[in-house]
Structures are given as structure tokens and as C-alpha cells.
Length: 323
Image (cartoon, rainbow, N blue to C red; front, side, top):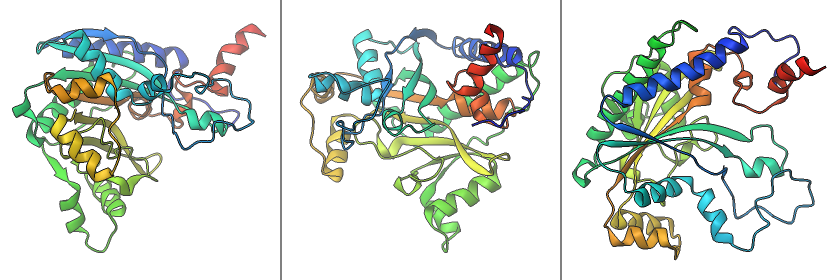
């Protein structure tokens, strides 16, 4: 929540103008190499099957009122949903699929938690199987950061701020842990990002479930060995933040291997049948947490100030004109 009397550093108008300019400039950067195609998605949610759906609490959005449970499995696993859309669309090598969407935190709605949505840019390309490696991901990640910096420069008329530096190198969390043998994985990660300020790291794993790092081992959507995050140290919160996650979709061999490690059943649906056929190319996906990105770029003191987040502060900004 935002305290009463909070004064933003950037006005409401300038913030919205900046967001529009930033998105336009980022797409302009991508269009130098790719034909950018915009896709609309339905509301997406992180449905958790373990939640008691019979809770007698008032819910303004109810994801549990359909007899067709497979529909909700689909919108829950939004990475697979985007892969499915791209495969059906038959995206070509010179094209870029650009998704802009909100993920509703379904469990937060049930528990009346304040953090109930995330706003995401997802940039997707089809690649060749031989490009399934860390070097390729590092190059792609560096290119996207370059595009973000270009968008910052081209939007400076609305707000002048710093660009981001990141060396064109990525680091393995296992090697980082060796630098700090007395620290846990999480504390080693925090120490390294604090020193580097802006860095690409791969092999980030489940030890981070209680931190601001959201990269986790999803056996359905990510090729674990080819997933990487861009992390910034935020001076305001004094914590590492994950700006984006870049990953490659698993092929059938990788998928079954990861499901076996998790001892998780393989679903029987059309998506799995397509994956099993190995007729579809791998997809590299860059999921940008643009709430956090704009929060850092615009030097916000509170992320809830962003107009794209539905909360009391933003509603009051609008409501004052209707009193």
C-alpha cells in the first residue's frame, strides 16, 4: 500500500507517456531484425490444485466453476499456452511473437492477498535445435537488454534516466556458490548480485522460493539446463530483482527426463501429443516483468504507483475527478 500524502517523482501523465513510448521503442528495436506480431491472451492464472476450492470466501473472480478442468490447466500453464499458440500460428524464423498480458494470482484472490497480479511482456522466437545452449541464451539476453536501453534513450523526453550495463557474459549459480562456500545458495546469489549490480545468471534453482527471484524448475515449460535470468540490485528495496527470465522450451526427450526427476505424471492432451511428435521447433522465450522494470527505470519508491497495477492508490488518482 502507499501511504497518504505520497508524492510521485514522475507525474501520472509522464508515467503513462513513458510506458507508451517505451513499448513502441522496444518493438521498433525488435523490428530491425524480425516482423513483430502482437498476440492477445485471455486472463491467465497460477491455479494451484492444492488449494481448497470449497473455501466459503467471497471471490470476485472464480476460476473453479467449470466442469472442464483441462481449460484451467491450460490457462494456469501460460508458458505452454503461448507455445501452443505459436505452433498453431506456425511462427516463422524471421518473426517475433510479442505477448502483453496479466497473470492473476488466483491463490492471492482466495486469501485476499494484496499482490494479485503481474504484468508481463513475453517475446518469443522459433530457433534451431543446435541453438539450444547457454552461449545462445547469453547473446539473446544481451540483445534484449540492448533493446531496453534503446527504448530508455528514445523515451528520455518523458523521463531521463540511466541505461543498464551488463557484461556479455553469464554466470552459473554453482560457480557463484563456490566463491562463497560458507553461504547458502540464496545468500551467495544475493551477495553476487549486490556486487555486480546487473548480471545474467543461469542454473538458479528452488532455493529461491522465498526471495524476489521467481526462476524455478518447471518441468513442463522450461528446459532446466537452458534457462537464465537477468538480475538487478535495487537500491530502494536493497534486494535483487529478476527483470526477465529467458528460457528454451523442452523437446520430448528433455520433457520426459524432467518429469521423471520430479516424479510427475505426463498429462494426456493435445499439447503433449504435439510435443511428443517432435515436429515443432524449440521456442526461446523472454518473459519481462515490466512492473519491476518500470519501477526501476522510473525510480519509483513504490511499485503500486504504476498505473498498470490495480490498487486503491491508482483508483483514487482517477476517482478524484468524479467527486
